[in-house]
Image (cartoon, rainbow over all chains, first blue to last red; front, top):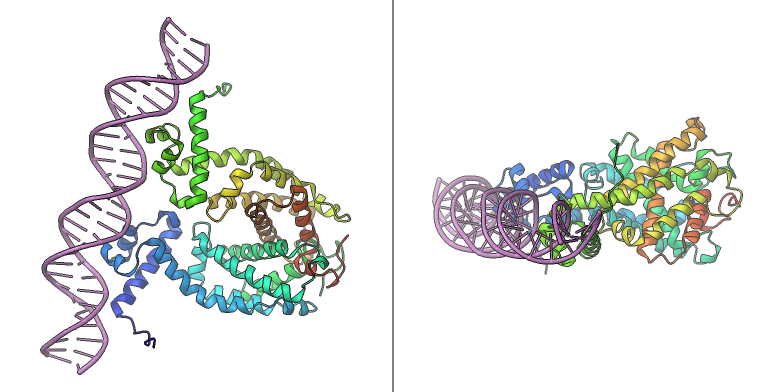
Length: 210
Length: 210
DNA sequence: GTTGTTACTCAACAATGTGTTGATGAATAA
DNA sequence: TTATTCATCAACACATTGTTGAGTAACAAC
């Protein structure tokens, strides 16, 4: 029924590429709120009317790019496995699911660096967190159905972890990714396993897990 | 030299109050990007020109409100004491610094609920996190100057904790503050002391601290 | 290479928001 | 009461938006 997605015209590809580049440039300079169609098309060196041949307006352009990038990311987040994260917690290696996420972010760093920055599109961060949150709910409900056995309820645990993860990602991106995906995944794993306070000094409280 | 801040005119106070109310209303509906001076003054039922008698533009209005709210918050954040948080970690009570923060947020919930929501002003969240971050650096450097003794470096630990804290705050505000400031501070304290993974089930890894 | 299609350019349009100004009237503080 | 300050109103130039119609250039397919 559905036809094979016809290959796009060279000119179309060119225009979209130019617009994407101009968009990231403008956001980095002026932030999401500072985008105008005129500025966009001036930088891309295309006619203003051409913009409207491809996108309805600026939010629509942002949406389209977001869909693109999340198509790839959703799969990876779907693979996240808390049970595995917990069962692996006897060694000191980065959790594989985290590693995959950081590798994906690294691959699309031009986009994420800008979009997850303070000047970027907040809806990207929201969505990223939402995907993590949903996934964690599923996995956690299966793994530990008895909420009363937990130190804090699922709800707060998940809000805590998903925000912390996003925060570390943003810091990593905004400081030039000085650590490799492997190294930063390792850091994240240690923090998740031992908790922040125990990470200050292992001798405070019980020893760290590894 | 500086005169005592002259008491403001009734009419001025009235106008500013109406604008504040209208602002929070618009942000809740359409988000920060959807604010227009016309909409603002229509809802406040004042003349459009009147807006410009008090504020240069919309960002300036946002800034003024931000300054107001942060004047009070800065003091509290300044009181945060990691050393205390760690030394108190033999009991299961909420850390006093966290409790104070949640009480302040609770008192100004009309503002924070909107501003720290996804539709709100991202710069509030940024600044909030920055204040926490700076404070933690100071305290942590004093308390544990030997970074090599830490499981993860200060930099990442702080990015992790400050983001997690903000995330829990946002979740608390957006879900109607169903827990009291005391209860939510308690949750935060447990998460900080035991770490997320250990909070899933205390028997995983070493026992929780208290 | 020719040909039909599609994307791009350009100029003009109404509509809407912005920030400012000057004249007028009303509320306020003292 | 009185002088001051604030709010209103109408009008202004300017910028951005989203659309349209006509002309031009690039493209894919044959």
